[in-house]
Amino acid sequence: LNHLWKEQDEDGAWGKWLKCKWPPYEIDDHFGVTLAALALGHTPSRYRRTTLAKRAERRLRSYLRTNRPVNPHQKGMMLWLSTKLDDVVDEKAQKLWVDEFSDLQRADGGWRLVDLGQGEWKRPKDDGETLPSDAYATGFTIFVLRQAGVPKDDPGITNGLKWLRKHQRESGRWFVRSPRRDGKHFISHAATQFAVMAFVACSDSAAKK
Image: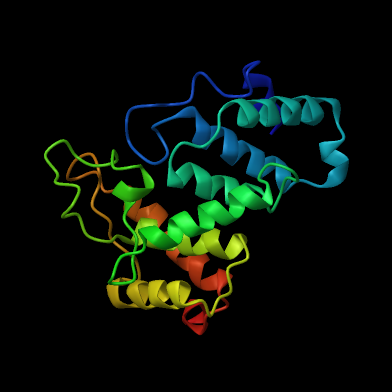
């Protein structure tokens, strides 16, 4: 972490963050900032009091005040971050964002990456209207909604978990088609991680099998 803070720019972000248009991680600076802020939020208070960490936190908070989230994925990261850093999301915004995620849930119980990216996270030839629900968006959304305090027995949560159970592969993982190109479906790894985190966040027995 000390190395990370030494590489941080004055504006709170990392100008060297890889942005090769691979959503949701290598697409903008906002994800890197929220991820780093989450890491800081997990550290002991004695570390947070060090000179380097305090400077980093000031820069992180400044960036987040100046660069408000512009799509649901960024809002989800902020909801998660609010469990580790105080005063980064107010109650009004939290409610609005939770409602926004609820409105994005599809009839089959899942969510879609293209919607978390405000309609932009898809291949050029894709028809955004016909793209199906996917495990990354569904696992991520369930997890962040639980961080925001949505009850695990909320119908949206339970229907989302049903979708995940139905779409898990025999290998144990969840497959998600790359929003960039075939043969590079790396987002499946993150989808599997968030699906597991969603089950754990709901204390679902499926997470223990």
